[in-house]
Length: 210
Image 1 (spheres, rainbow, N blue to C red):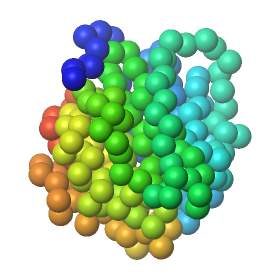
Image 2: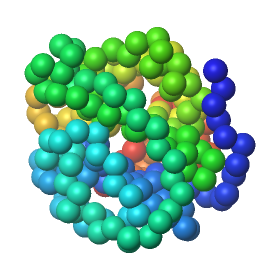
Image 3: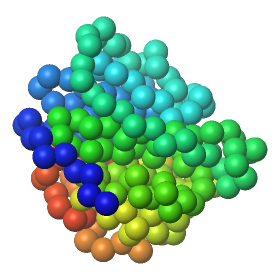
Image 4: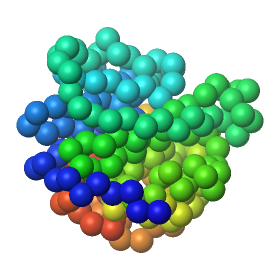
């Protein structure tokens, strides 16, 4: 089912701040997903935005105090899909929210710490996405194989893996990004920790460490 908006209001930048923290901004507004309090190998966050979206209440995802809010009213429609942080219905780690924003006509989804496979009706809601930010490291979240199956099912324009261990940064109980990439076509290694939406097409984008 096609859900892409036709509105196009100018360049939108997606910025990775490490772990699962991303910022989406244009000249008028900004939203931050899942700011962390402290994660090994990543710097201290000191961000500014109009909106903060948190997938769940663990301190490597819910550090709202690391983001100074503008207090302005901005138009960023948000859709939430309630999921779980584990494959046992939340019994191990609780719930998780997938946030889908319509940001100036681009649909961007942040999967938080998704911990289980998605149901057909959930996958249907995630079609027609311009950007997907998805965990791939396993242990605390879905692993590379599960993430790859989701991406193949929903066919986003650009997929950015997150929540993995690179040998220095992240949680060392999680895997690296390679098991996910091994199951993906058109992998691009970017030399920056940010990109402009529309700059890459039909690709999996590995961002440089911030």
